[in-house]
Image 1 (cartoon, rainbow, N blue to C red):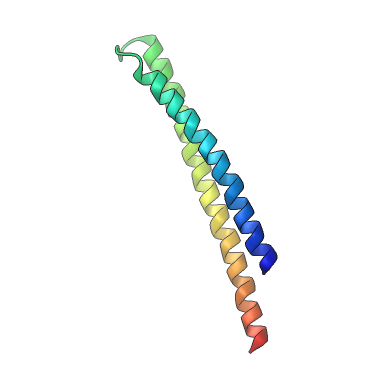
Image 2: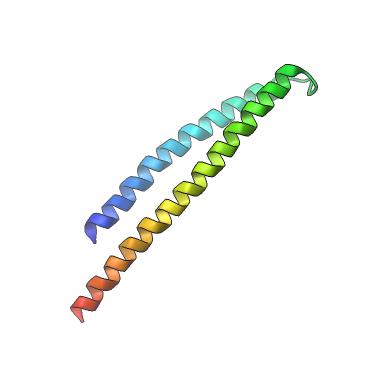
Amino acid sequence: MEKEVKELFEYMKQEKNKLQKLEKGLIELKSERDGFTDENSAFYKQAKQAYDDKYKEYDSYRKQVGDGIKAKKAKALDYKKKFEDLQT
């Protein structure tokens, strides 16, 4: 069980770093988009589309990470229950 818990924490740490990088990219794109005052300009539309695409990627990845964490946590809890059952 200790191995599974360590794997869970390592996975969470790695994914947190990846999510932070994606968030930083989102912030940069938002800043670029917000730098344009004319919402009808091609530059604004291009920046908005880039931001929207990156946000979809971020949101999808965030959900994937959440599902991965839930699965690893369930596995660790299953091992814990098996371990407790063996001791009784």
